[in-house]
Image (tube, rainbow, N blue to C red; front, side, top):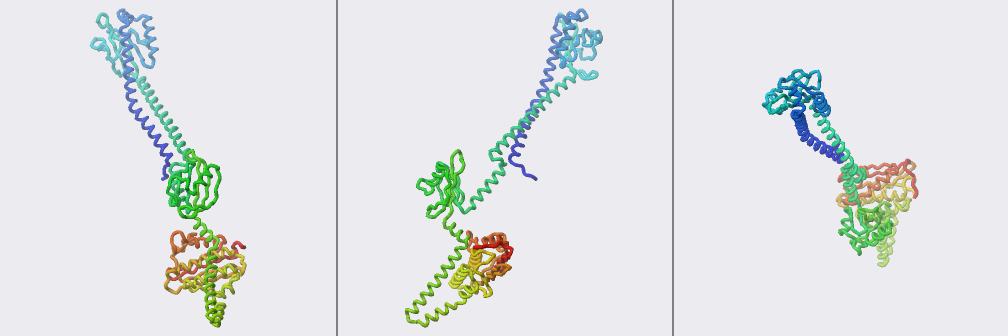
Length: 526
């Protein structure tokens, strides 16, 4: 079932409220109006009968036994004036002989009904009856006519129930008209209110607007960057979650390193891009962007990015950190070897120094790498990783059937360094707490069909869920929250070149990862 929006709820609620109020008003007023209409009608009939019963000309006519043309004309005039309320006015003597009737053919004939007896007998001078005659029912008002206290006749004024029903219908139609007008007014006001609300909320329904607000709040809180919004009074009117950990104050103090930039940004309406400041004993890159007025005040958005994390991420994106680590490890290893040679020479152990130099010159891994890998950057990376593996007591080996020319048509050196560096580091991490034989084997092969890279290790392995996460574009790391960009970057490079990433792993046994870029990939040059 489709859920009602807040705007529709307001519309329906307001209309229902108006309809209920109007309906209750009609139900309370309508019976009173009908009762009042009946009372007024009876009063009108009785009043006409009373006036005519006390009219001297009517009394004279009853004494003579005949109505003059003058009195007949007067009564006709009254009938015309009251038409719609009074149907008949009758003047009759005590013998029930009609002296006046609107229908001239009935003058002189006997009055029928039987409800005139009280008036003729004088038992009741004025009263109202309901007479069931033919063809309809009448409401009759009688009044006795007296001369010197003696009843000489009566006057009867009557109206048909058709007139009564017509008046009732008019009252009911008026009430329904009021109800319809109230409903139309309610609809218009509810629509106007709902439109006003939507206009205030930029055309969104309140529920949708609230959901968007919560979603954007969650998105902003999930960012690594701290985001502040500062108005011209230097009040911080918004902080996302990372920014709250950097700044606890509600106002920017004048001694705050953010104060000058924010003030200039608001005053000059300029964008300040990535300046470096020290805040809470941390180094940040700061960007400031002026915003349109908020709360009738100018404001600026401040973006804080941890400089250390930014530099680390940049290095990881480019693969530079792997090359630097490799060169650092290589340099460290050769410095140690030079110290050994220097010490042997100083001790006079020349033959042992020469033997040590020859052994190092014939060192298996270094020779293999330089012989098989002609891309000097990748060779340096592998030699550095081999030396680091030796420090970590890991058996590191490049397969003898590997080959990598100085330039290849499938991946740039930077992309290749990123993939190799991250895969090897992941293998090293996977064996951090391993007590079994610790081995990492690398294969790099390039031919006219494509480039293949395989990294095998005897580490802790991965679960099926972790493998699925990698294939879905997620990361993998054993370091915990905040790491794991490496596999995500590898996945992006492979996808960009329409390559293939295969992961074979068994938890507790090891992992084999294969990257294949075929000739359909995008040709890259350094």
